[in-house]
Image 1 (tube, rainbow, N blue to C red):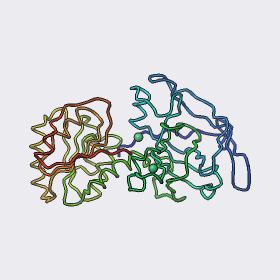
Image 2 (image 1 turned 60 degrees about the vertical axis):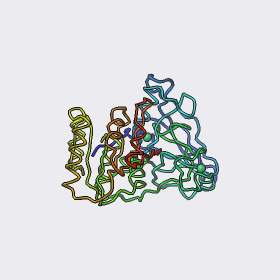
Image 3 (image 1 turned 30 degrees about the horizontal axis):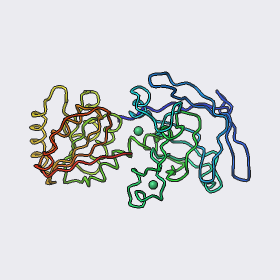
Image 4 (image 1 turned 45 degrees about the vertical axis):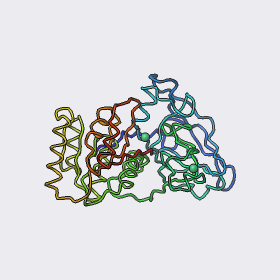
Length: 332
Ligand SMILES: [Zn+2]
Ligand SMILES: [Zn+2]
């Protein structure tokens, strides 16, 4: 259903269209890539500019991925349009939802050569205390393509091989490697939030914001057997959500908080689910969505904060105490 937009594959000389990248032998397995190019952000608000990438030479544990598809994330829009700072200084090639094929590899990553892969949006170091404590998404030494270094709005991208997700050569009908790029973030981020919340068939899930991330959130929650409510301000998104797993859809523009709460109370009764407390996921990344999600908290409720905005809202924190509720944030 709702997916992030996929950048069309950038054609290369091999299939006879634009550029002239070529792998260069450097040993039995090892190669570097020349003639690659990408589209870089030079300043917030400016159009992305084409930049040639002279040579991509993977170090020991790195690989060069020939990009098949790269999703456009809300975070990219934040970098490009809203002045959210990238960790690496501009100019920078954005894009962190990457799928493609490994065309060059360092010595310790040579076994990846030729493989189809999804590149995780957040690549943890694997060795620090956070990584060892099974919290790799908050690793302070993580590498995020398109944020810590050049990303996937390009013909090729250089990334660490750690965490690469292999994709089988034969895919189910209707799926292409290009389409799978959004698994890197738009699918796995709601998946992480939903799994860590312990959502199951006994629960009612409320997804606030059912766009590029929340649309997958609805499908994942429904696949886990929960009764799903979708809230958005865009009727077309709500229509998609209702076709793909949401049993109740509510329009945040025309329904105030009190009416939303009442509708959800009735829905819980009808759904006959016995889970203690709603499981709410804020996936809109807007102040209005955040206020709505927080306002839906009730006894034993759980709120997963997935969407990102630089803006602030005012909350009565004591509601958490009064309801014995939990709020948890998710990065990647
Ligand atoms: Zn993202
Ligand atoms: Zn780490």
